[in-house]
Image 1 (spheres, rainbow, N blue to C red):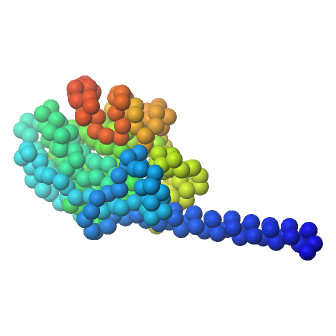
Image 2 (cartoon, helix red, strand yellow; image 1 turned 90 degrees about the horizontal axis):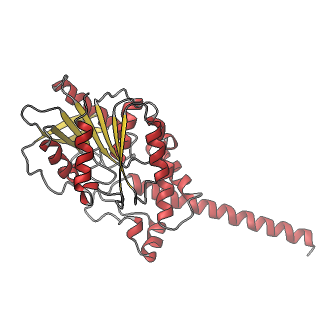
Image 3 (cartoon, helix red, strand yellow; image 1 turned 180 degrees about the vertical axis):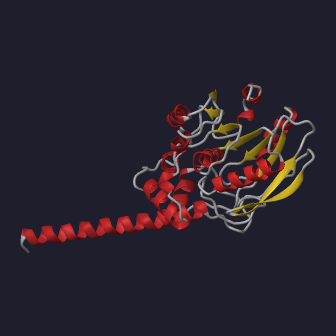
Length: 321
């Protein structure tokens, strides 16, 4: 066989192998994106965080995707509350409303990805201790709210807007503070940047810089090259759920947020980097404060730094409006 013919055949085989690898990568990314954004109705345990998985578990998750049962509220508040339903563009939301007498205002609390409002009971109790009424809400697809889908902050901004409207209709003159963790923080920033939501103050914990960056961080924590899998994951997540996933960026939203904002971040966070946090903080257009918590990861900061966390919030909220 002539050398030229051998080279053409080899080139053709290499091309076919590359196309097959690309097809396989897209199939895997499509499956991951679906499992990441769609909760299952069957009860079970969510796949552990990447940094907690063994090598064998990481390989299994890379091949099959995460287990993602719908988050359920673990316990009810120990303080007085009433369950209320709030209509959102994403369906009916379940909220816990707990008013206090002669309140300084109301704090609306929003949880993170694959979580629910019962995870914020410690935070809510502290806000009540400071004299604020509280409203805790399950995003659509989570806890007691309708649906089984999440868009990791994009459509959740519609839920933030619905909650703010519900509160403004009932207490139009009261001070309104929005408190969000991770995905909840990003949803708040988008609601204010793009949906016309106006609060009086924000407290945002560990918002991620962008959807692409958080996908890259996730693959890095599993020891996997970020390209092209992170890019494909974001692409298919947007296609499956009908939203511009590449445009989901807390840094971009922050440029249009003029509300006084307190930004909190843990220095050991494997899923939100210092670079992301610095960029979001620099972009915030209004009055701002920041507090870093040494050694804390992607977790509630009151666990390791209760006094410092409480102090940061108290000092921020006591500032004149």
